[in-house]
Amino acid sequence: MKQYILALDQGTTSSRAILFDSAHNILSSAQREFTQYYPQSGWVEQDPLEIWSTQYAVMTEAINRSGIDPHDIAAIGISNQRETTIMWDRKTGLPVCNAIVWQCRRTAPIVDELISRGLSEAIHDATGLIPDAYFSGTKIRWILDNVPGVREKAENGDVLFGTVDTWLIWKLTEGHVHATDLTNASRTMIFNIHTLDWDDRLLRELDIPRAILPEVRPSIHYFGYTSLLGADIPIAGVAGDQQAALFGQGCFSAGSAKNTYGTGCFLLFNTGAVPVESKNGLLATIACSPDGHVQYALEGSVFCGGSVVQWLRDELRFFESSADSEAVASSVPDTGGVYLVPAFTGIGAPYWDMYARGCIVGLTRGTGRAQIVRASLEAIAYQICDLMEAMENDTGSSLSELNVDGGASANNFLMQFQADILGKTVSRPPVMETTAMGAAFLAGLCTGVWKDAGELTAHICDAHRHFIPEMPSDRRQALLQGWHRAVGRSRGWAKPEPY
Ligand code: ADP
Image (cartoon, rainbow, N blue to C red; front, side, top):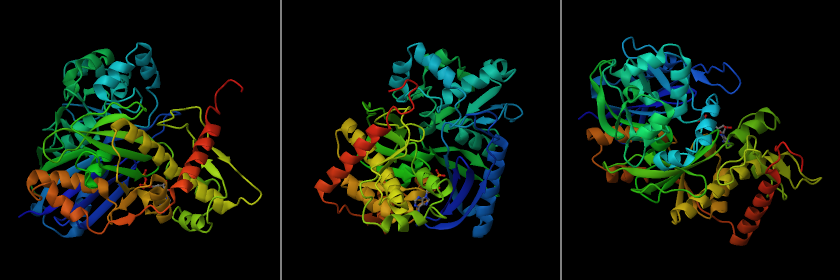
């Protein structure tokens, strides 16, 4: 039986491909970075052809390195950077302009206009999202309005829109399939997460023709075949990166959650068959489901996660490599009452204060580098703790264990402090490639490499490292109280009026 799965992990800065076997082992992998374009302040673009050429190169590289026969690959799974918007000519297959990347702020005025027309609630009710320039809807509108000739072609159905998964499926199937999956669709701000269809009202309000939109399929689905890799291989699993990581962590059912500690942090909490409406500014989004029933998640993000460590490294020059932060923080028993609030670009859920700015409080003559490094790592954990509390309030349920992944989850000090401050076990998988793993799981479930979620879980539970909470509860309460006072000091700092 065919037993290998090729997972494509198309990220914001690089394209990667990882070949897994049915026992979840990595046979080979390959990675290539691609160019980021910043044509104006706040604008971020990528070249769709370079996204594709790097993705194609790493696929073939990973297969060649492994030495396996492409005929033994059961399926391809795709996970991708979400929300990034690509439009291309149906006939020539050429992009009409660069991809507008999720971080790009150029459409903030379009979002402001939607809000001023009183559409916030309609957007939130239909899509589960809070109106923002991150999501694809306003990016599509911008291209239709600003790239000459695109609007007319779109009305005739000669231009297509896709998120990055859709673009890769189109290229892999050589222009035969124009489709996306539910998780990626749920990040566009034009998809109704209740009816599971593009939302006619929002399409009207944004003046986007339906003809350009891809078909929406479940994450586990035969999307089409590619013949580009030396065999006919089905594309059988697709999900946005955060949802793929949730799935790759084995969070298949309601009540499970994962946090990814990257540049920022993304906490996703599986809420099962029902989308939960947040009272704390969290997003409702579609999660991958192992069995064909739609599942939802609550999502919260922290703007400044691992990037506070980069700041200590690159701006303050406190150490050479991010990993050194662990030894420096562990060299002191505590921060000596110091708190650092890394609100460099404001602070998100549950505070939502875009005028907050970073601060360090509680400094004494004895404060040194180690205390500040320790306070920075602790701040990452405090922010996750605040998000978790908001999620537990919204869902009315309490989580027993948090699954973790992402670059900064390698930091044992941070993981132990996270467990202590949450009062919950933190569980870290031995293979931290959970995003690619999630894409592989989806494709493998579709093609019968694994028969069901139970079979996957049996493997996943092996060899996790568990960080068990050890901190006495009164200490925990005192630290959290200090953190909340520190956040209070950071709030409103950048407000134009004096106070
Ligand atoms: P992204 O996918 O957002 O680029 P990664 O998952 O690769 O992020 O994680 C990179 C981030 O994690 C960086 O901000 C880096 O400073 C931080 N990081 C990496 N290793 C460690 C470590 N051992 N301790 C603390 N932070 C780390």
